[in-house]
Amino acid sequence: MSLRQELIEYSESVLNGDIVACVKHKWACRRFLYDLEREATKSFPFIFDEARAERFMDWMKLFKHRKGVLAGKNIDPHIIQKFNFGNIYGWVHVDTEYRRFKKAYWQVARKNAKSQSLGTVGSYESSAFGEPFAEVYCAATKKDQAKLVWDEIEGMIMANEDLKDKFKVAYGTITHLKSGSIIKALSKEDRKTGDGTSPSTFIIDEYHAHETAELYDIGDSGQGARAQPLLMVITTAGFELDYPCYRVEYHYVSQILDPDNPIENDEYFVMINELDEGDDIADENNWGKANPIICSYENGMNYLRSQFKVAQDVPEKMRNFMTKNMNIWIDQKQGGYMPLAKWNACARADVNVTGHDVYIGLDLSKRIDLTSSGFVFPVEWGFHVKQHSFIPEDMLRERQAKDKVPYQLWMDKGWLSVTPGAVVDYSFVEEWIEKTVEENGWNPILLCYDPWGATQFAQNMAAKGYTTVEIRQGTATLSEPTKEFRESVYQEKITHDGDELLSWTVGNAITEIDHNENIRLSKRKSRERIDPIAAVINAFVQARFAETNSGEGNISFISINDL
Image (cartoon, rainbow, N blue to C red):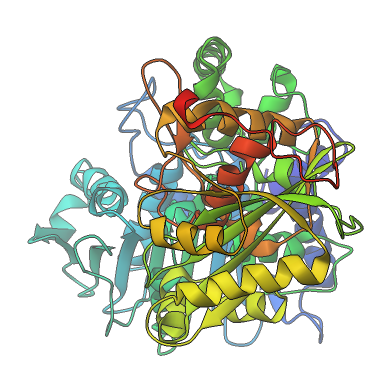
């Protein structure tokens, strides 16, 4: 059977359900069949060149498996590899014969031949089949990760008696002797980012771990001089939903596949293998959606079964199983305080707390950083919370560039204020709280503050008639309120206004746990800012003892001696 016919039959089997596949996998197959229908037309000037696609498959078959039960045996490309790389290398422009796809994105669970596939791409592109003097780069955030693909390429080439004499390996560079093409590893960790290069192929492994799009942008912008460049991204899902892989690329490529979405990009190949929303993770019949290769043989299924068993026995490992083995994006960092989905479900824009009792929490932080005030209002379903933060005017531009969040937009929406000068002016914060409390008719019950660095602030507010109480920052004080706040969010007994600054910090928050399973939010472990949610929890330490909105100054609170 020809490769073209094999891919057609495979696509039809996926679409009719004979092969287990997720929705986006089906969209990719539908896209392939649609492209075949319209090839070589005015609106679609590309043709599927089967010979070119077969040439890549033949190249892949030259190499041996390096790991697992098939180690030492020649690679026989799996049908998902045939589909993906048959598309990438088979489609060419009808006039120029240059490769159609300049970018490719494959998201698939771990242990599904990602490194093997990338290794084949890297060696192929640097061989006689690639451009003369091709530059192939394996890019990742960490040196070890970047070296994984480079090592795979080196291992595959050196294990082939017919090829190893055609390449030279020295000083971290693999060179194809006849064409002068090179293969190098790049990483931000060792400051090798590829600036000034002219990549013909730029391979990005595990893009989900990239905090910024810096390496992606370097690979993308550096290919302008190449006739048929390839930017190849292979990744699993991840935990950092504010990183560019999920926030930008995953959503964009999903739109490209979606037949009902008007966004099109005929030069971008996309394959996503993941569980669909609502799939039962315990149902083995669903596992093939994220694991097209592993689920095709018994040892692979046994591996997944063992991973799932451990995840069931140790709940902390379920997060990794869902993300790495089932390819599901999880909106919770390692040690994260709570999933953002839970928090976002509590947003209510119609809550009016004018005239309510309020518990005010403070997190003054450093004067050059974010200072936050939190407001907790007892309401009939539990509590409604707000925050307002402050940043020094002279630091706004620097903080926005470093934190990579839209502080200016949050100012426009009323969640953030700028204080004059280079440091936060605490008198400005005092005046803002006084004015806001008065304008809203709030009845301030307690002002709850971290005694470190806030004693003078508390004394000033006490002189203005506020009842103040110290909130010590150890787990003895914070553990139960922090757990209770999270539980109340899960039960939707906490509501908020949809404040994006507050939501950002909830997603940033990392907990630290002691040997007695006491917890608190950790500024040391949280890489991004958590000041607004810390201020809210400071207020919640006392507010949780209030049962209703009294309107008469309910000042019942736990004794400092109890803390």
